[in-house]
Image (cartoon, rainbow, N blue to C red):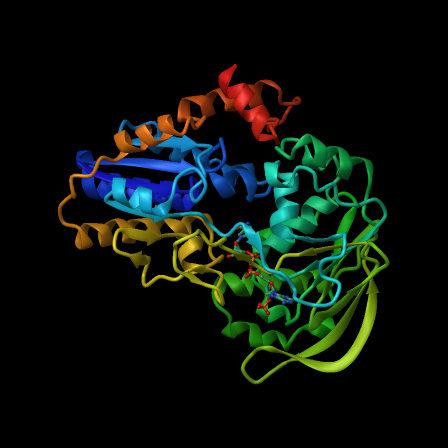
Length: 432
Ligand code: NAP
């Protein structure tokens, strides 16, 4: 029997488990470990709460989780409860699917002032991640500045802009619903250091800004290159740019503007004890496509700054790490003999949920090549000994199903669930 441990129960973790089942059939046992008592990582904590159709992919992961060959071991932290070396001694392969849950920072003056928040924290807050439940960002009447031109920036802008009625049917957690529902931001600015042709946004995601109850996108036609230059863009990208062009032709009268400021980069953040403003610089596209400062600076009001500029994988003691790229040092997913990584922990924070599927299949094939035969390791029986010796209060997939049932039962009318936002509440529901 071949024994595989996957660390992280998000999309990368479950697609890899699925791939291992396909690759090794009945001759494999997979343990999926997660520091949270609840599975599915980014699906639960990252995907926007009003994008329920995307979250439905967790049903596919559940089918994998319920096979006899796969088990979920929640509330077990690698590096604290058990070490990488211990897992390598117990399993034929240890695969890190820990994602990239830490925010990149701007690295400019004032970027740690209260009111400057990374998207991991802000998205985690409205999605009920226990690490960020206490964030309580100030939104009432503020000018919100969102830095970055990717889909995360759009998620954040849309959730800030939506009315309570528009969030019906979402699983936004109670603390965020209450805070966002009783207050409204005055304006939203989405800051891009490059231009409309350099966005990482999708057409569908941009289109969702078009028909909001209280808010509307404002785009300057002067920021665009000539329309004929759109022809050189890849089809999906061209559609997104067309959506932006459509916005540029309108000036809707709604109370909250969502202003796209292209060719503008943050230089410094100011405020006395709390963010109040941002100094920005106009940019041009340099010859290699990067943003080049023009020296022309100005100040914009900012009562809340949300940086949506990418993520990093947190290092794990004993695992080689590429500090510059913010992920594990690896060659095609191999870190060291028996130690692999997949998903954002391997390639950085890019791509959709589905991008993780080929990643998982590639690593299963790699393991089969590297280790044609299993090494007679103890696998889950050995982990169970460590869990018992250390008196670890782990959570199983059946426990998670109880947590999920409790979240569904306490949901408000029309909502799919009301998530628990504290680990203790989750454990209580599991044991109840
Ligand atoms: P992203 O698409 O890489 O966008 C990051 C943005 O941050 C870029 O516009 C980048 O500008 C900007 N940036 C980086 N450093 C900066 C700095 N120091 N100052 C100013 N701007 C800076 O990443 P993301 O939005 O975090 O999304 C991550 C992945 O998840 C993407 O593949 C995304 O498509 C996916 N996602 C998908 C959905 C969906 O399908 N609905 C939702 C959310 C996320 P430059 O381009 O100039 O570097």
